[in-house]
Image (cartoon, rainbow, N blue to C red; front, side):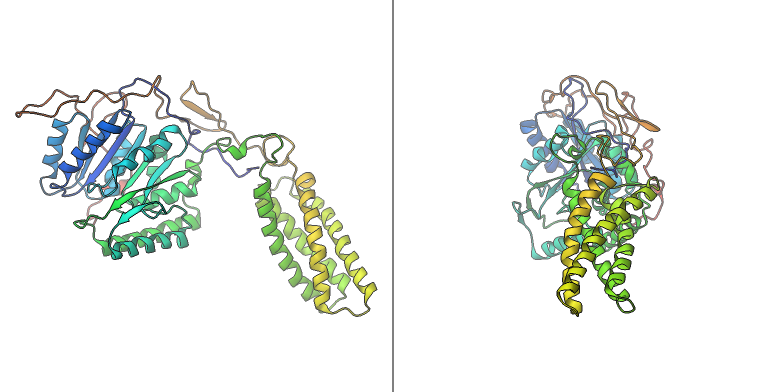
Length: 506
């Protein structure tokens, strides 16, 4: 039973509805900086792969962030020659800034990006975005560190990559395996809420986005990839590592202080199968058992310490009663909050009173055990007393859990919440409406809701020949959903104010 869920601003995940709208299903962004040599071959290879294998309409967006060579001209030429290719230019550097700006402006329901060197084999692209199209996952990442991945790279980069991910696991408790593989995708509705929370504009952008998403309870799908290192990579390893460590410190501090509004990215109550009312399957039993055992173990240690202290100036029965009383109050409070998820002060006095009744039963068991021990021997050793008390407490613990679950914190309303817990506002979803009602909270407007079958890939437009170009609809990254056009360089505004601050080194 999950009582800690709050209705977030995201709707429940759904398979993208099928439709015949002209909007591409997938928008693949290629962030570039001074890539005049690699950009052309990369885009041609990616376009050929998508044209041959991808079953839905797609778009390839070149995000040039302040290149100083001929990269902008190459991007414009590719845009003119290939209908599915669009170009976009930012006047400031930063891969994260480029991704956030283009993703925020895109109208495609699935947003992806890959590095221009195409180190990742493109056969992983469809497995990457399929869980997002189906509604199974919120984000997807390629992983070079999965067991079934096949990677070719030098020992130096291998050591740096694995060390960095160990740092993430140790400091931020990250569970995803590869934060910096340049091969990721995200659902647009998730991106609209998640991207404004990401501060970094450089290489740490990926890590920060994944950590926030994971802490908010979003599902991250990992795809093992085949990856070959690019020996001509222009990434400055030392500078990037330094910036990443600074980012780890900043995000860790924000998580520790609770300054990140993770509830904005939460899914509504009912989106998780653990919320469902399944016959003959007690809700949350496994999670409650784990929580109760952890609390019980700590309470037992606390009890034994108290008993040893009280035993210095009192008899065994008085020491046992005092230690059990203090530890029982603490145990009830901890189980109320951590195991059964009861928030607020409502019913706290009643719960403590019922906990004291359970304490009385435990006292009877332990006191009876001590009485039996004293009857068996007139002067038992202290270690023997402790052993008897541990055995009696184990029996009392089992009984305490059953009484807590069935009597003190029962689930009687069928919602998976204890009877005394205030009802959580549940986001209701109407498939025919784009609005998700959240009771007293501000409603969320679903950003993407096409009707009918998913758009199919349009017929291939031939490349330009003999200096002529085909007539195509021009795209700007600032295109609004209503079809109006905005100049991508002049009109798009940054998501965060500091994106336009001068002196950014990235």
